[in-house]
Length: 231
Image 1 (cartoon, one colour):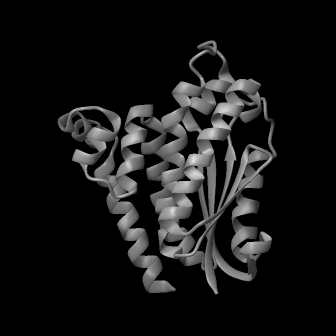
Image 2 (tube, rainbow, N blue to C red; image 1 turned 90 degrees about the vertical axis):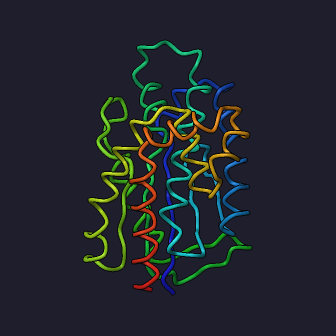
Image 3 (cartoon, rainbow, N blue to C red; image 1 turned 45 degrees about the vertical axis):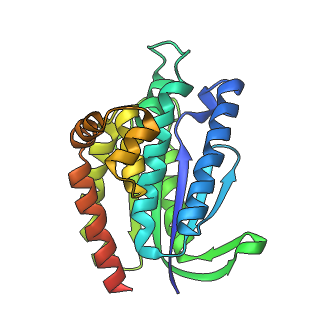
């Protein structure tokens, strides 16, 4: 069974004070509920700063990954509002939020009720993430935050450049732009988003355009089409 797993590592989580870690943890529970409702996902939070997510509809894994990324960036400003502007570690959290690795491959064991996931998909995503987090944690430099490995080297190589471009776009977005991208990825129209964030619809449209939504949407739709055809 070809399946999709997302592994995520919150950037600079331990640099937040306890109060802000608690605030962050509460907000992540909201995201967990959204993923479970919209994608029937199995989401588990490990040690506060690590996320694992099984997405039953494999082709939806990139969309779910970007939902996680955009959500965390959208709340980062509130979480970090009381920190010094020159705090490099917290600045990394505010800019990047989270590293996310997608693994697409066979799962030899999947027992959601027992919390057991085993197989290539989870090995792929976990190993990709470990490569990024075993380096010097005091090093204030991050090049990429989105990673992918699939059962097919050709398929992986086809989408890595696309992920790198999306990564660059999303990491440049502000918190408000990220919030709008989050809702767009969930399928809300601009009128509904405007009501949710208490802004004019024209403002939502402007933010959406400047946040690169057109490029993100095309990339996600292309990914979904190809993955659905391949598996």
